[in-house]
Amino acid sequence: MFENEVQTRCAICGTGILLGLVLVLAHLPIILLIGPIIILFLGIIADPEETHAVWYGMLNTLGIFDLSALDDIERLTYAEKRHYFWFGEVEMAAMLAGTFAAPVGIFLAGRTDMSLAFIGAAVLFLPLFVFLPKLIQRAMKADTDAAIEAFGKNEQVKKVFWTFFISMAGLVLARVVDPVTAQQIVGLITGIGM
Image (tube, rainbow, N blue to C red; front, side, top):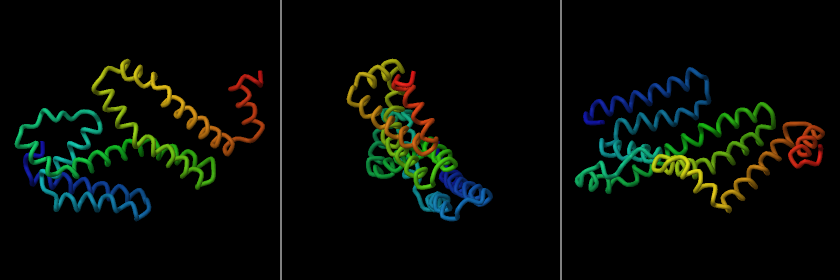
């Protein structure tokens, strides 16, 4: 992969141009063109080893990169490009978290105040940004039952998750539905309203 430098640069620049066209044709805010400009800029100036390091970082976030597949010369080369590898990891983690957080923010924007929708999406984005890549990596290395069993045994994680989930659900519930309906739902959940 990426063996021909000219093809690699053309593919990266083409990706930047295509993404820029999509953003312009979708009439999205002009500030979003920063992303395609950065991709285009990287396609022009980045070395193939840097591009490989970013790509390997992205694959590592998805749990499908094996360091043992590299030979000794490649390991030494990429050891010097460590920050590009980390950039690829962060970029992929942000894309994965944004895949879930952006639709939730858009959904909440139609139902609540814009600031609450942004806060809800940001609060969802942060834990997904940190934990989703780790869960994917663990799931790719182990079978699903073992990962779920290990995740379920950690009582502290379960307590934090459910506290966070209930508080956010309560906040959204209080802002989206009327107070009588919210009280009925809380009564059903707690068993008091039966």
